[in-house]
Amino acid sequence: SSAFVQPFRSCCVKRVRGVAEAMSKTTILVTGGTGLYGKAIEAVVKRDAAAKDENWVFLSSKDGNLVDRQAVEAIFEKHKPTYVIHLAAKVGGLFHNMRKKVDFYRENTLINDNVMECCRIHGVKKLVSCLSTCIFPDKTTYPIDETMVHNGPPHTSNMGYSVAKRMIDVLNHCYKDQYDLDYTSVIPTNIYGPHDNFSIEDGHVIPGLIHKCYMAKRDGKDFVIWGSGSPLRQFIYSEDLAELTVWVLRNYDSIEPIILSVDEEAEVSIKEVAEMVAEAMGFQGNLVCDTSKADGQHKKTASNKKLRTHLPDYKFLPIKEGIKKSVDWFVENYDTARK
Image (cartoon, rainbow, N blue to C red; front, top):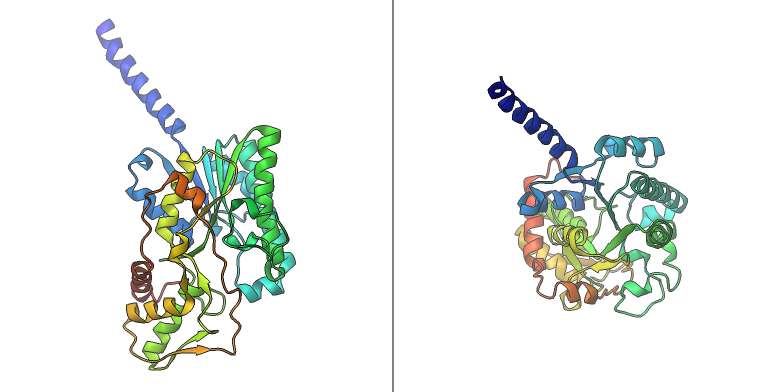
């Protein structure tokens, strides 16, 4: 009989161990997981050997409204995350932000409060939240760095959004002081890549230019860019940003924010970007600057010195290659792309 008991016992032990392993598997929950940034993290994680034993969950708005505390509680109960990357936010273009400052403040504040407090209640080991360069003071010196976040009020145009976002950094410090929790934040510069929102009215610079150029080529018209084309910006390809964000989750051990940006020398003018888009699209027509439209800030240069002290040799995808990838993706997915 003992000969029968032995294999039966080991089979039971194996089954129990299998269940325990499934339960103890690290789960990383990504809010806002189906946008430009979330999709890029998903692509990076698929190539990451360290992620093959992890359970990555990419949330979309269909999984629950993060403004609603009960919906957020239910998400945390269901997935029991070990780590959280918080990308979800109510976002919009400049004019949308100017018209609805209260909505942007309230919705983002509620989303962030729900996610952060649920992380605490559910014992999440580390939270990485996404901030934005628009949170920096309107009156500042350049290049901007992580120490300057609270040195003065942000620009009035998106005051509601910016202040709500700044509060994430304030709360990261408060959660450390009161509960000794490791919550941190990343500050990307201008993100672009596949799965972006290519809306001309409400989208950002590169996707808006890609959509405009596509239509100019299709309709045989001029490719018109708003403003003089002279403002300078730093653009980061979405998958570079995703790689760096996963690195922050695994290796960056400070609650202080970290700017994730290309080097200062990689700053380009909007006109140069438009020319790269035209080349990638094979557009042969005229490129025209509509100077009756405002330019916005001339430059917002950010320093990536802190990132470079940790990763001195990280190679960013050159913008020309990133734009080519983005243009090809848009052309291929024109019918289904957000626009």
